[in-house]
Length: 176
Image 1 (cartoon, one colour):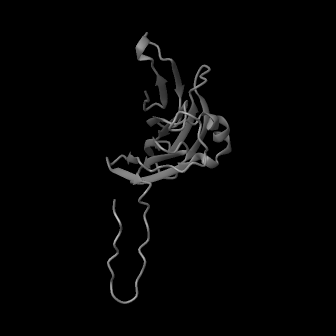
Image 2: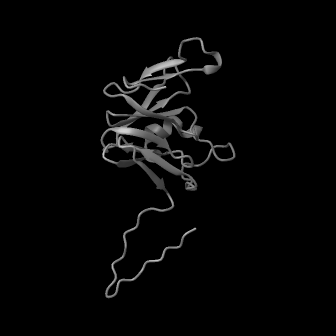
């Protein structure tokens, strides 16, 4: 659970005794607007905030609270949503104020790789190479404060239209 005072708490509903398993202040200068667990990296929790940052946390070895592993200003204003890409362990996206979308490819981040690299699950349950290309089967959806939903489909990257000399030619794209 996350709150507007920047606190994130984890509850075990199987043995609810009124106390959280752990509690932490994830963002001191703004409320936590969204949280996401990485489906391919056990223990990687991602939070985003109206303080304009994304923060990474290690929840696997909680002692007594999750350990901070990095943060980044995504340069898209206040953040309202965060999502880990389901088929790529190192890619996450954020939706910010002003209808902005930002991606963070963490594959080149040494500190993150050192912390989480050995935990990546493959489709068969084994560890996969960090160089594996995503299969782009999933679409990441993001929202912002204006209730706008944007979708990022890795297969359909925007392409600039080529200018043609003379007559206007129709551009036909192969669709699936």
